[in-house]
Image 1 (cartoon, helix red, strand yellow):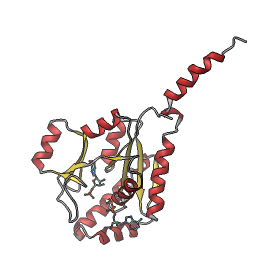
Image 2 (cartoon, helix red, strand yellow; image 1 turned 90 degrees about the vertical axis):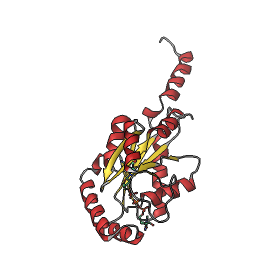
Image 3 (cartoon, helix red, strand yellow; image 1 turned 180 degrees about the vertical axis):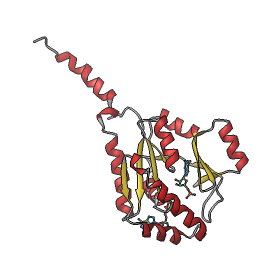
Length: 212
Ligand code: ADP
Ligand code: 5GP
């Protein structure tokens, strides 16, 4: 069945919840189903990251230029750094009726929801706050200070996460990846997302219409 459109999917979650890990596994398992938007950021590159793969790493001036030129669909500040979604890639995929996933934080997610009311908003969290801290510490990419700042941001974010559509508890990684996939696939079958197929059937059934 040809669905009406591709989905704009937002995956958010506390820093260290496992968003990046879930996305990596989801794309490996379903390379033809999903496209991940790569964000621009002013944050410094972590060991193991590559420009153009995790992010497009930008200077402050370059990032501001992107805003000025209207090249970003949304952007937000997170713990002193700017992050934004390049507009062109997302618009291209929407036009091609393909699913696109944005792995972004809450303020950006709410901007996307305003722009695309049909967007699917997923939020992921670990099974406990202690586990969140363990994962951030275990990742080893931030200083204790920055980890503390990120945990404090999580506390604030938890107050507004009820604006999301679905919650994924990232306990078993494989289960979380499957849940994200299953939710997205089910979402495609919503009646409201399939008006073309429904209208076509209505048209074909007219042949059988009787006046009595
Ligand atoms: P985020 O992108 O949300 O900031 P990451 O994907 O970088 O989080 O994950 C944070 C840390 O937690 C990484 O070291 C990752 O390997 C680990 N991690 C992710 N998912 C799980 C899981 N289900 N169980 C245990 N550790 C996990
Ligand atoms: P990190 O520094 O851990 O890679 O990302 C910090 C936060 O910024 C995460 O919550 C991540 O989802 C978010 N983020 C990444 N890219 C974007 C983006 O393009 N826009 C917004 N609003 N947030 C983003």
